[in-house]
Image 1 (cartoon, rainbow, N blue to C red):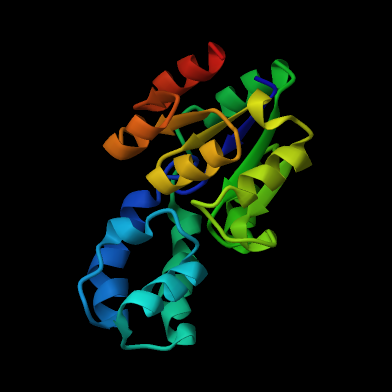
Image 2: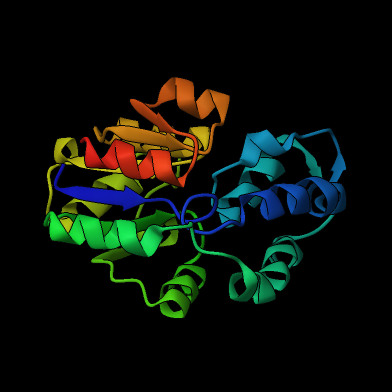
Length: 208
């Protein structure tokens, strides 16, 4: 293992439950006029692409701008209040001591990722949002293919840490071994390795 590519929401920061609740309780009921989409349909997808996904399948009650505002308004304070993965600074130091490259590869917009990196002063080599890539977001492989290129490591020598099935699919399709973090059953079934908590993640990565 020469590089670790971390998803952000639900892995590096404890925001996944917030977004799942926000989407289920506010975004979907507000945005969809007819139909009954599930939150799992859009999990791990960039929220800009989520609008397109929903609009192709359901009758929408709001336009794109109003839909995006449902996310942007919620994110204003979220990334100033959320917690970093326990022990991540120590894990990052261990990876650096091993000479591993480190990237954050997220469906979130770049300015959300940058806010987290700056707030916690994270020493990472690459920050990559699906919005930075000329291609579809997760579960398509494009963002992980580009991340491996930018960190300068062949995909088979990288490891991706993801919490969602769509994230695992994206990394796998790019030829990158995956660790499913957090215990999601579908993500765990799709991944090469699994880690239920921060300590298990640290142990798993240490063995790769």
